[in-house]
Amino acid sequence: MAKEAFLRQEYQIAQCCECGYLFVTPRPPLDKIIAHYAQSYRGATADFYPKAGDRRWRGFWRSLLFIPYITGKKVLDLGCGGGFMVEAFARFAREAVGVDLSENSIAYAQKRWPKYRFFAEGLAGRCTTHLL
Image (cartoon, rainbow, N blue to C red):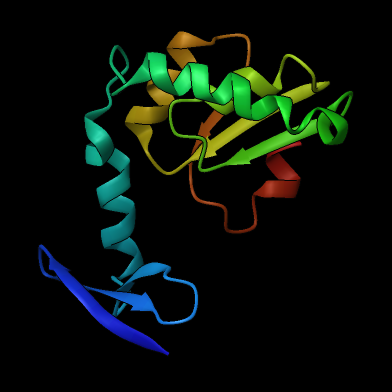
């Protein structure tokens, strides 16, 4: 069960009555979602990512919780944004790869951490055949 929470631009935001999760309803068409994330998400560019220093610091500390699960393994970060968790996971994992819809975020990640692999694309049928 969900209740209306607020209106953002032309989209109604609803909230789950059980857990509080916020979501867009009705869901925008896929082409609009891709267009939003591809170029304008968070104002990221190849040379700038909002709050990059804080994100890197938080990523490092959060990654410590994953040490038992990722040490020596391959890690795939879906929705990696600017690559901060990929960079943090790579300290312990055998390999860390990032995927995000935002071309600008991936451009930042690729420039900031060139030794890791990042992909700006959707996930339909690609995860197991192209990334790992």
